[in-house]
Structure formats: structure tokens, C-alpha cells
Length: 237
Image (tube, rainbow, N blue to C red; front, side):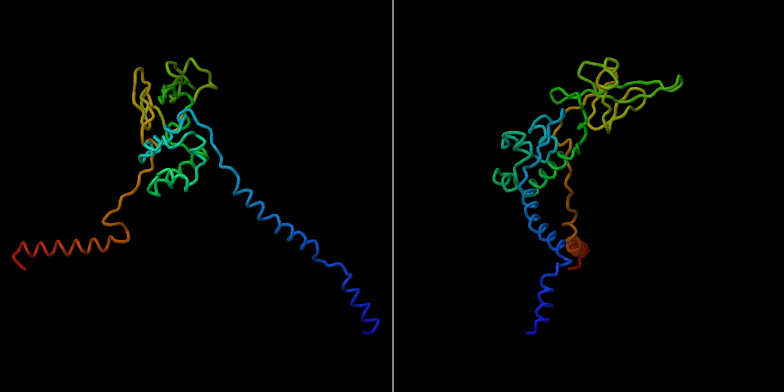
């Protein structure tokens, strides 16, 4: 090979590559990508704090319904309720699979702060919350009535404005009637909400005529049977 060609080849080899920074960045991202994913997957599950209306495992399972209250003894702590995996729940005997899926779905909702009725109560004693009517007069001719959650045995006028809780889903009908989910009236226009089984339950649908996949077949066979019965009743065999 001629000396001129050798010099040109060496020049090409020694010339810096324009794509070097991009290649280095891509290689670095590729090498760190799986580590980030694995660390995220290995992160411990988030354990939400109990709330006044849901202070323990049994209350949580009671509220979401579907018979999960009977499994309360299988969870030794609040942390266990929110950290056990689906496989571990199966080993504990939570069957059928739709029951486990339902519990996992409600765990995620609770972590996100998506509660059912009473989830925003601040004053709860032994599973019972009291609601009272608070009146305000923005103008001499107009009275505004709101439903407030107060500690047991107290009235809204005994609390500061910062201590008042206006729960969602509850309102005042007429002059002093509190209406809302599971609100039962007591004396002096107040109401009481008690933890009740299935209070937050998502009701399962029921199949009509075998469900969507078998509905046409079931209805066809029923029509055949009905026509046959009518012919027999008319003496046509």
C-alpha cells in the first residue's frame, strides 16, 4: 500500500466520530434503564394511614362488603392488609379470584384517597358520626343551612370555623332535616351515621338470560319450549 493511502486510512481512524456523544448517552441510558425499573418494582407498597371512619382492618372490610368481613382475622395488622400480594391472599384462603381482585381494587382506591360515604368525617366515636345543622345568615332575609360533622355531644356553635367539617354527600332538606347515605335522624334535627356492612360496596351485576354470550341461545330455546307448550295445550302433538 502506498504511503499516501496509509496516511489517509490512519486519518479516518483517528478522526473523532460525530455520533460519539449520542452513542455514549444511549449506552448509559440502556445500562441504567433496567436498574430503574427493577428498583421501582422492588419498592415496598405504600401503606396509607387509617382515617377516623376507618380505623382498623375489620372496619375497612366491613365497609367494602361482599362478605370480606369474615376474613378479618386473617390479617394480623393494618400493614399486612395493604402489603400482601395476590398470591399471598390466595394462600390465606381468599377465594374466588374475583374476591381478591375486588379487595386489591379497593386497596388502591383507599391509597388514592377515594373513599365512600363518611370517608371525610373527622369526628367519629366507636364507628358513629354525628351530623348537625349549622345556620348562617349572609343577609337579613336569607338563611343558609349546611350539614356539619361535630364531636359527639357538641353543637356547631361550640366549635371554631376551622374545626367545622362539611362532609360530602350530606345536605339539609327543608329547615332541619339532614339527608344523605345511611343518615338516621336523632333529636333536635341532628343525624347519626354508623359504620354498616356493605356501606362502600360495589354491587355486582347479575346475568340476564345467561349473559351476553348465551342470551340469544337461552331465549331461542325458551321460545321453542313455549311454542311447544301452546301446541300441546291446543291438542296439537
